Image: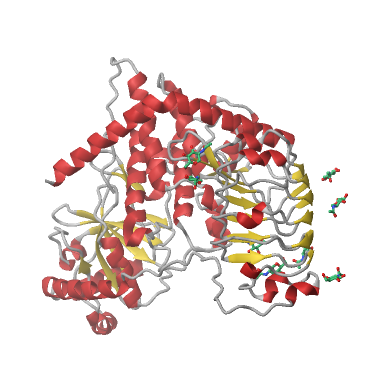
Length: 627
Ligand SMILES: *[C@@H]1O[C@H](CO)[C@@H](O)[C@H](O)[C@H]1NC(C)=O
Ligand SMILES: *[C@@H]1O[C@H](CO)[C@@H](O)[C@H](O)[C@H]1NC(C)=O
Ligand SMILES: *[C@@H]1O[C@H](CO)[C@@H](O)[C@H](O)[C@H]1NC(C)=O
Ligand SMILES: *[C@@H]1O[C@H](CO)[C@@H](O)[C@H](O)[C@H]1NC(C)=O
Ligand SMILES: *[C@@H]1O[C@H](CO)[C@@H](O)[C@H](O)[C@H]1NC(C)=O
Ligand SMILES: *[C@@H]1O[C@H](CO)[C@@H](O)[C@H](O)[C@H]1NC(C)=O
Ligand SMILES: *[C@@H]1O[C@H](CO)[C@@H](O)[C@H](O)[C@H]1NC(C)=O
Ligand SMILES: *[C@@H]1O[C@H](CO)[C@@H](O)[C@H](O)[C@H]1NC(C)=O
């Protein structure tokens, strides 16, 4: 039944793609016109900060500040706040974006008069031009702007009177004309949907029209006092609604579940806490350094016995569906080996007597209490997806926090790509790299769908990606950033895979995951580490390096030489590079969502395989399972 549904879904998805391709060419010319309009605009209006508006990239999804309609046929939103534009808006540029709905050029140094050709923007709904140096009158008749919902022209130098048409916009919910030099009387108005008004600090006089007398006097301050001579009518003011992040609500339920699982675990695991403690003590004594060792069996010192009784309440908690047959006695007999030191602690490989191999991760700097820890483990442990490495079990005590994972013999993508100290690189062909990217994107998409669409990975990097049995990328180490304080900002920055905004706010977000994902794509494409040194000891930051190469000249120089051996993949490489660049855009809001990224990556091969001769023996990559 379920299979059938998924199959149907795939079928529909294919159909949709086909439709897109049929309509593709007409849409392409329209959006190319929009692209040209934007290029003209940027070329004619000087700006202090560079825009990543590279002609070679498609305008949708890649260019800073630009958003397109869903079908990618038109530019519908342009937001370029604080770019340092100075000078007047060049004529016949933005006005060609006739499908534009949102325009924000706030907080720049734009001067000159209001661009009259904006009258062409008939679908404009949101206009933000505040904090510029516009001068002169507002346009006399823009009643063509039927869809205007928000107008913010505050903090400019507009003068003349408030035009009649502004006061008769049916859809208008917010009007901010504050701090200009508008004069004359406020025209009679009919703004049925107006919720926010500010026309303070102008040179207005006369009386406030009846329909606006429901607003408090503060919105008329700083004009001729005659404006303040009305008594506020009793109808309430509704301010424009603000987004408020609804709090996640899964917490209560989880603890109940966690409790149940603990009960189950207790009955199953029985006395294992005892043995486990020895394991823990062993790990402790090994003092987190890189020596392989053998987990000991045998006697217990009085000291350990005491801490055992303290830890009596703490048990290894296995997750549902975990079919490991080992217990902690078995773990004691296992040989252990340090796999690596990660951001959140040290990972050990433990090989049990029956050859079962697991990874035990020992967390450091856990900053939350037991309850919160368990809740977070519960969130992580219930994610079951072929591209997310399952958490099998965890352990919490005052002194030790452990997580048990499956072991992946091939090592992480980081070790395959970069080896250790530049040695032992695994040969990864393009096919495999594509599958790594697709798998990892599916894993992240699954994580981002969790917890009401709010869950964040928080520490995505190639060292946390492994290959599953089908050689697709598989994501590990998720969601630990909320329970540890291990990420000192400076270290994080030096790591090179963390989004730049995380140095200010330490809280990882979904967009910062997308940034880190983009860095991993760059690693796959270039074969280089996020931060590496050249022969001359110069520290190279991968994202900046790729930017500089791309900016200077479009060459194949960015790509891993290993990849250039394969014929006919250059287009795919370039396409993937563009996707990566979209992910590592500096402004978090402008990065694509992971689902969009996933679609784009899947398209790299799908589209391509249609153009290819059938003699090509590359395996097609099946579409994504629903997330
Ligand atoms: C304006 O928006 C409407 C509805 O979204 C759309 O049908 C129409 O094509 C748009 N006009 C232009 C010029 O894009
Ligand atoms: C706009 O500002 C620029 C300097 O940024 C100045 O050279 C120019 O004269 C100004 N134009 C107008 C119309 O004020
Ligand atoms: C603009 O308004 C018209 C008429 O109210 C409506 O049909 C159209 O969908 C609106 N366009 C947008 C982009 O909202
Ligand atoms: C009005 O705008 C100017 C700059 O345009 C700014 O310096 C001033 O603080 C603003 N005044 C108010 C009351 O916001
Ligand atoms: C608006 O300001 C300009 C100078 O920037 C001036 O020439 C014009 O007379 C002013 N208009 C009004 C109505 O004050
Ligand atoms: C207009 O811009 C000002 C300054 O950025 C801001 O304080 C105000 O809330 C904005 N008004 C609206 C309606 O967006
Ligand atoms: C209205 O605008 C003025 C000037 O920018 C500002 O000082 C004031 O706080 C604003 N009032 C409201 C209610 O936004
Ligand atoms: C304020 O308005 C009153 C009445 O409209 C007018 O007599 C007076 O001159 C105005 N004051 C200023 C400073 O414009």
